[in-house]
Image (cartoon, rainbow, N blue to C red; front, side, top):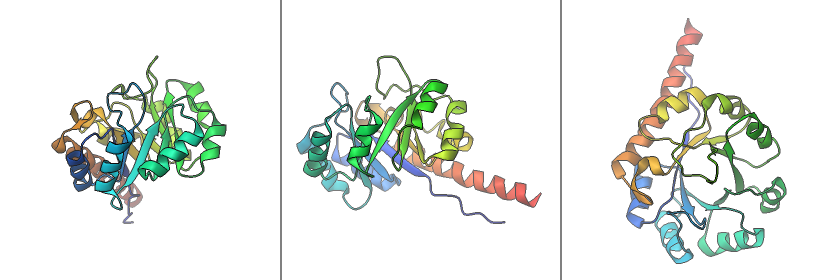
Amino acid sequence: MNRTPPALHVKICGFTRIEDVEAAVSAGADMLGLNFVPGSPRRIDVPLARALVGAARGRVEIVGVVADLDPQRIEALVAEVGLDRVQLHGDEPPEVLGTLGPRAFKALRIGGAEDVALAARYGGDLLLVDARVPGQKGGTGVRVDPALVVELSRARRVLLAGGLGPDNVAEAVRVVQPFGVDVASGVEYAPGLKDERKMRAFVDEARRATQDAARAADSADDA
């Protein structure tokens, strides 16, 4: 049987320059993340966000990353910037996610079974999983234990984040088989400054792993 592998979504996060947005789109990214979280080295303001959205509009999905922001302010930010989706990366309860509708999704930090169980309380079309690091909301470069999220990925459309880069994303895709993968620091040479070659390599390695998994499944069927 010749299987067509499911499309793997690639999200690259933390843009601060138009030239990096153009390079990511050219590399084949599906989603670009813009960071509005206070204290993040990748945080940008609304005027810059509008310029970045203008460079990519209609070619990829634009995701605004926020943390513990009032829902009304989130709605205003979506309208001001022209965002397609919103990623809630703080300690927002499930009720907040519900008020924002289908374009919002939750990012959860996974460090143990209790964090996996918490995921069941959140709805939404997508769920992003990142590594739990005490005192940090994300962007730490620490990998998620694949064993904790394999079953979650079977049940939900999971975006896998946490310590991914061109050198390890293929292995992560083969093991977890997520809906998509997310990267920031793994394709940078400084916070918010992207490396074009790393972005292209990341996309290529992630997609190649999906193709390899499909071929392996075909071989198993034919055996």
